[in-house]
Length: 219
Image 1 (cartoon, rainbow, N blue to C red):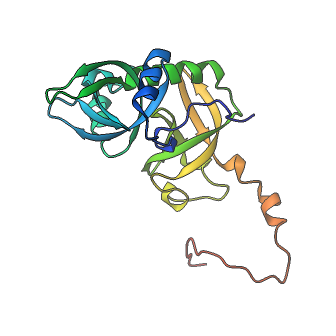
Image 2 (cartoon, rainbow, N blue to C red):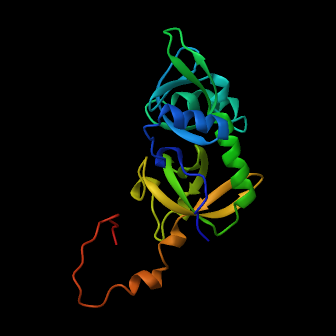
Image 3 (spheres, rainbow, N blue to C red):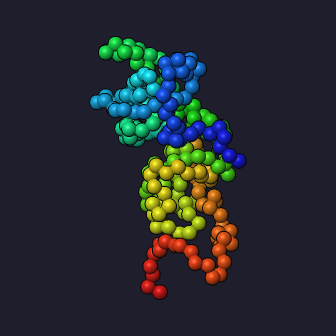
Protein backbone atom coordinates (compact mmCIF):
# COMPACT_ATOMS: atom_id res chain seq x y z
CA UNK A 1 0.00 0.00 0.00
CA UNK A 2 1.34 3.44 -0.92
CA UNK A 3 0.48 7.11 -0.51
CA UNK A 4 -0.37 8.15 -4.08
CA UNK A 5 -3.23 10.45 -3.02
CA UNK A 6 -2.31 11.01 0.61
CA UNK A 7 -2.31 14.69 1.76
CA UNK A 8 1.28 15.94 1.66
CA UNK A 9 3.08 17.44 4.65
CA UNK A 10 2.93 21.22 4.47
CA UNK A 11 6.59 21.90 3.88
CA UNK A 12 6.88 19.08 1.34
CA UNK A 13 4.49 21.01 -0.87
CA UNK A 14 6.19 23.32 -3.35
CA UNK A 15 4.95 26.92 -3.15
CA UNK A 16 4.31 27.74 -6.84
CA UNK A 17 4.36 31.25 -8.24
CA UNK A 18 0.59 31.32 -8.69
CA UNK A 19 -0.95 33.65 -11.25
CA UNK A 20 -4.06 35.67 -10.42
CA UNK A 21 -6.08 33.41 -12.73
CA UNK A 22 -4.86 30.27 -10.95
CA UNK A 23 -5.76 31.73 -7.56
CA UNK A 24 -9.25 32.71 -8.73
CA UNK A 25 -9.76 29.19 -10.12
CA UNK A 26 -8.53 27.69 -6.84
CA UNK A 27 -11.07 29.77 -4.93
CA UNK A 28 -13.90 28.64 -7.23
CA UNK A 29 -12.89 24.96 -7.10
CA UNK A 30 -11.89 24.79 -3.42
CA UNK A 31 -8.33 23.66 -4.16
CA UNK A 32 -5.75 23.37 -1.39
CA UNK A 33 -2.77 25.65 -2.07
CA UNK A 34 0.53 26.32 -0.34
CA UNK A 35 1.67 29.81 0.56
CA UNK A 36 4.61 31.29 2.41
CA UNK A 37 3.75 32.67 5.86
CA UNK A 38 5.57 36.00 5.86
CA UNK A 39 4.68 37.28 9.31
CA UNK A 40 2.15 37.06 12.14
CA UNK A 41 0.62 40.30 13.44
CA UNK A 42 -0.23 41.18 17.04
CA UNK A 43 -3.75 39.77 16.64
CA UNK A 44 -2.26 36.41 15.53
CA UNK A 45 -3.40 36.78 11.93
CA UNK A 46 -1.00 35.20 9.44
CA UNK A 47 0.06 37.18 6.39
CA UNK A 48 0.69 34.87 3.44
CA UNK A 49 2.38 35.31 0.07
CA UNK A 50 0.85 33.32 -2.80
CA UNK A 51 2.71 34.22 -5.96
CA UNK A 52 1.18 37.30 -7.54
CA UNK A 53 -1.03 38.17 -4.55
CA UNK A 54 -0.83 38.38 -0.79
CA UNK A 55 -3.40 37.01 1.60
CA UNK A 56 -4.44 37.18 5.21
CA UNK A 57 -5.39 34.22 7.36
CA UNK A 58 -7.45 35.29 10.40
CA UNK A 59 -6.44 33.71 13.69
CA UNK A 60 -9.57 31.54 13.80
CA UNK A 61 -8.72 30.09 10.37
CA UNK A 62 -5.10 29.17 11.19
CA UNK A 63 -5.65 25.94 13.12
CA UNK A 64 -8.34 23.27 12.90
CA UNK A 65 -10.47 22.88 16.06
CA UNK A 66 -9.27 19.31 16.73
CA UNK A 67 -6.07 20.92 18.06
CA UNK A 68 -6.43 22.01 21.69
CA UNK A 69 -6.47 25.64 22.76
CA UNK A 70 -3.11 25.17 24.48
CA UNK A 71 -1.57 24.22 21.14
CA UNK A 72 -3.36 26.82 19.04
CA UNK A 73 -1.23 29.95 19.64
CA UNK A 74 2.06 28.11 19.31
CA UNK A 75 0.78 26.39 16.17
CA UNK A 76 0.07 29.78 14.58
CA UNK A 77 3.42 31.34 15.52
CA UNK A 78 5.36 28.30 14.33
CA UNK A 79 4.02 28.79 10.79
CA UNK A 80 5.98 32.00 10.21
CA UNK A 81 8.74 31.62 7.65
CA UNK A 82 7.52 28.37 6.15
CA UNK A 83 4.94 26.97 3.78
CA UNK A 84 1.39 26.46 5.01
CA UNK A 85 -1.54 24.79 3.31
CA UNK A 86 -4.65 26.87 2.78
CA UNK A 87 -7.85 27.35 0.85
CA UNK A 88 -8.95 30.66 -0.65
CA UNK A 89 -12.30 31.68 0.86
CA UNK A 90 -12.68 35.18 -0.61
CA UNK A 91 -10.95 38.43 -1.39
CA UNK A 92 -11.05 42.03 -0.25
CA UNK A 93 -9.37 45.37 -0.88
CA UNK A 94 -6.47 45.93 1.51
CA UNK A 95 -5.89 49.36 3.14
CA UNK A 96 -3.22 50.13 0.51
CA UNK A 97 -5.70 49.47 -2.30
CA UNK A 98 -4.29 46.09 -3.35
CA UNK A 99 -6.41 42.96 -3.68
CA UNK A 100 -5.90 40.67 -0.68
CA UNK A 101 -7.03 37.04 -0.50
CA UNK A 102 -8.85 35.65 2.53
CA UNK A 103 -7.35 32.27 3.46
CA UNK A 104 -8.16 29.31 5.70
CA UNK A 105 -5.73 26.68 6.90
CA UNK A 106 -8.50 25.25 9.09
CA UNK A 107 -10.58 24.18 6.08
CA UNK A 108 -7.55 22.58 4.42
CA UNK A 109 -6.69 20.65 7.60
CA UNK A 110 -10.28 19.50 8.09
CA UNK A 111 -10.40 18.24 4.49
CA UNK A 112 -7.06 16.45 4.97
CA UNK A 113 -8.22 14.91 8.26
CA UNK A 114 -11.44 13.65 6.64
CA UNK A 115 -9.35 11.96 3.95
CA UNK A 116 -6.90 10.52 6.48
CA UNK A 117 -9.68 9.13 8.69
CA UNK A 118 -11.38 7.58 5.65
CA UNK A 119 -8.24 5.95 4.23
CA UNK A 120 -5.82 5.37 7.11
CA UNK A 121 -5.23 1.75 8.04
CA UNK A 122 -2.37 -0.11 9.74
CA UNK A 123 0.37 -0.98 7.26
CA UNK A 124 -0.18 1.99 4.94
CA UNK A 125 3.11 3.68 3.91
CA UNK A 126 2.81 7.47 3.88
CA UNK A 127 5.04 10.54 3.45
CA UNK A 128 5.90 12.53 6.57
CA UNK A 129 8.21 15.27 7.74
CA UNK A 130 9.85 15.45 11.16
CA UNK A 131 8.64 18.51 13.08
CA UNK A 132 9.90 17.95 16.63
CA UNK A 133 12.12 15.58 18.59
CA UNK A 134 11.58 14.51 22.20
CA UNK A 135 13.30 11.87 24.37
CA UNK A 136 10.31 9.53 23.96
CA UNK A 137 9.92 9.87 20.19
CA UNK A 138 9.63 12.06 17.11
CA UNK A 139 6.63 14.02 15.88
CA UNK A 140 5.93 14.08 12.15
CA UNK A 141 3.62 16.07 9.88
CA UNK A 142 1.55 13.50 7.96
CA UNK A 143 -0.45 15.98 5.87
CA UNK A 144 -1.44 19.66 5.95
CA UNK A 145 0.29 20.17 9.30
CA UNK A 146 -1.46 17.24 11.05
CA UNK A 147 1.08 15.73 13.43
CA UNK A 148 1.53 12.11 14.57
CA UNK A 149 3.95 10.40 16.95
CA UNK A 150 6.79 8.02 16.11
CA UNK A 151 7.62 6.36 19.46
CA UNK A 152 11.35 5.92 20.03
CA UNK A 153 11.14 2.11 19.92
CA UNK A 154 9.50 2.36 16.48
CA UNK A 155 12.26 4.46 14.89
CA UNK A 156 15.21 2.09 14.55
CA UNK A 157 15.96 -1.62 14.28
CA UNK A 158 18.71 -1.17 16.86
CA UNK A 159 18.28 0.49 20.25
CA UNK A 160 18.82 4.27 20.34
CA UNK A 161 18.93 6.69 23.26
CA UNK A 162 17.29 9.63 21.49
CA UNK A 163 15.46 10.14 18.16
CA UNK A 164 18.14 12.63 17.06
CA UNK A 165 20.41 9.63 16.42
CA UNK A 166 18.25 8.88 13.38
CA UNK A 167 16.19 11.98 12.57
CA UNK A 168 16.53 15.75 12.41
CA UNK A 169 13.83 18.43 12.32
CA UNK A 170 12.71 19.08 8.75
CA UNK A 171 13.80 15.63 7.55
CA UNK A 172 11.54 14.06 4.91
CA UNK A 173 10.76 10.41 5.62
CA UNK A 174 8.30 7.67 4.80
CA UNK A 175 6.55 5.97 7.68
CA UNK A 176 4.09 3.15 8.25
CA UNK A 177 0.81 3.61 10.09
CA UNK A 178 1.16 1.41 13.17
CA UNK A 179 -2.12 2.00 14.98
CA UNK A 180 -5.22 4.18 15.00
CA UNK A 181 -6.81 4.89 18.38
CA UNK A 182 -9.69 7.37 18.81
CA UNK A 183 -8.55 9.39 15.81
CA UNK A 184 -4.90 9.43 16.88
CA UNK A 185 -2.46 7.87 14.45
CA UNK A 186 0.83 6.41 15.65
CA UNK A 187 3.63 5.64 13.21
CA UNK A 188 6.54 3.28 12.85
CA UNK A 189 9.66 3.57 10.72
CA UNK A 190 11.72 0.52 11.57
CA UNK A 191 9.65 -1.83 9.40
CA UNK A 192 11.01 0.03 6.38
CA UNK A 193 14.62 -0.65 7.40
CA UNK A 194 14.64 -4.44 7.08
CA UNK A 195 15.18 -7.08 9.78
CA UNK A 196 18.50 -7.87 11.50
CA UNK A 197 18.83 -10.90 9.25
CA UNK A 198 18.19 -8.90 6.06
CA UNK A 199 20.72 -6.23 7.04
CA UNK A 200 23.33 -8.76 8.15
CA UNK A 201 23.04 -10.52 4.78
CA UNK A 202 24.51 -7.40 3.14
CA UNK A 203 27.91 -8.15 4.75
CA UNK A 204 30.32 -11.08 4.65
CA UNK A 205 33.30 -12.16 6.82
CA UNK A 206 36.58 -10.39 5.92
CA UNK A 207 35.00 -7.17 4.60
CA UNK A 208 36.21 -3.75 5.76
CA UNK A 209 33.35 -1.29 6.17
CA UNK A 210 32.80 2.19 7.63
CA UNK A 211 30.86 2.52 10.86
CA UNK A 212 29.74 4.98 13.54
CA UNK A 213 30.50 4.40 17.25
CA UNK A 214 27.19 4.68 19.07
CA UNK A 215 28.34 3.88 22.62
CA UNK A 216 31.28 2.66 24.70
CA UNK A 217 30.78 0.10 27.50
CA UNK A 218 33.20 -1.03 30.21
CA UNK A 219 33.00 -4.70 29.22
